[in-house]
Structures are given as structure tokens and as C-alpha cells.
Length: 349
Image (cartoon, rainbow, N blue to C red; front, side, top):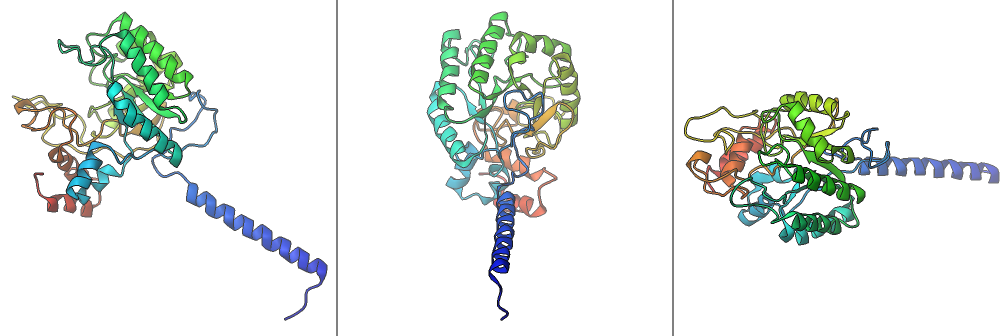
């Protein structure tokens, strides 16, 4: 071996050190790169976090109903559904303890938690008076959400259907405005629900967004729990964004793989349609003012029970293996092996 002089040896060691550092940094960068489901891109309109700040992968909960059913029944065929990040629905004060656990886990793993706050008074515009009993109770609920999320930041979809509903009122608008302000002040990304393209004209929804705090929110959400196609939602979202100051928006693609179902005599078309499919997985490869496509409604949960809902046995909001199988079997972007596993599992739980 040829001897190396002192100066040459030091130079060689320095070069080796630099090369090693470059390789290590390259490896770390590759290992930490976010997957296809990432936080919405932080452009100029995403005003809560400074532009150019790094995104985070979305949080995948192991405690959603589908994941629990999968474990209980050793149902590996559900993996294409349960491994995808989805929103966590917070339907009242009773859900705050589990939300706190999820927030801690998301913070520990460096993931962005997505949740739906869904407890507005008279939520269903019915005699049953679903949701918080009054405005004061609702404000306690929002304060509880903020406390449960302490130590992390979340993407919050605020009150599906609340603006588009027939029972919308000026007081509801003020209540939502205060909720947007409180959540935004806690540095969360708030997307105020704006219904879906098949429900209200864009001008109608723009007025209600402006009455309900959109100027203090990160943006608005479309198609939550609905099945309008992504293209249809995008066209509607661009119209609506133009009317409310170019606000960004997110689209729920969880169950819109086949678009809106046709009307069928004797049943509600929107309620557990006979043929349905998963939409595209969460993504920020989007266009216009649409900053993300997310799975907000948890696919596989029933829309309702009874003959008008396709004879489903599970009440609205409860996981149904029948609904999950229908979604997976008709999802064209799934590998054929994944669909074959569903077929092999049978047609009933």
C-alpha cells in the first residue's frame, strides 16, 4: 500500500467525511419524503401557515369503525380502504376524549390529523333536534375541540350541510363565524362546508359562506358525504371560489368513483346506492383553487337503514361490510388482486 503524507491524508479524510454526509442526508431525505396523501400545498391563499413551509403526511387512524371491524373479523380484504387516511368525525362532547388520543398520536408521528366538527344545533333540521342543544352548548363543544387538539394542528372540516340546509339562519351564521375564528386562532386549518354541486347554486352558497366566516377560514369543503364527480365538484368549486375572494377548497372523493347515482323508484338515490365505488385516494396533485382531495366521509359507513336505503341493516353512520364490499368491487383503480380478495371473502358479513 502506498503511504499517504500528512496533508494528503487530511485532505482524503475531509473528502470521505463530505461524501459520507452527502449520502446520509440523501438517505434521510428519501426516507422522510411525504407519500401521495399530503397536506394541502401552502400557497399564498393558505394564510395560516407561511408559504413554502413543509407539508406533512396525513394521519391514518387505526380506530375508525372499518379498522376495528377488520381486526375483529380478520378481514384482510378491507386493507385498500383502512390504509387510506380519512377524517375523524367528532359528533359531540362524547367524542372529545378519543379525539385527544388521536391528536397525541398524530403529533407523535408528525402526521396531520383531519377531522370533521359536526355538532351544530338542529343539525338535521328536524323535530329530533340533533346536535348541540343550544348555542352555548355548541360554543363549549368548539372550545373542547380546541383543548383536545392542544399540542398539534389539524385540518378541520366544519359542519357538513350546515350552510346549505333549509333551516340555516342568521344566528347559525354568527355561530359558525365564531367557531371559525376560534379554531383559526388556535392555528388550525378550517374548511367551512359548502354543500355540493347538485344542491345549491354557487351564488346562493357564496352569500352563506360570507355570512358564516369564510374570510377567517383557510377555505371551504365540497361534496362531503356526497357522490358528485370530482370534475363536477371542481367546476362548482371554481365558480364558488371566484365569488368569495378566490378562497381555496378541498373536495371529498371518498365515494364518488361512479359519480352521482341515478334516481330509482321506491328508494332514495343518495342512500346506499346499488352500485358505488371509491373515488381517487387523497392527493394534493390538484388544479385551480382546489388544494386537496380528501376522504372526509368514512367509506363503508351506511347512509341509512331500510327499504329506501337499499335494504341496508345498519343505521346511518354505522360501518357496513356490505357497503364496503360494494365500494371496493366497483373501484376500477384498485389492483385486480384486491378486488379478487373481496370476492373471495363472500358477499355478506
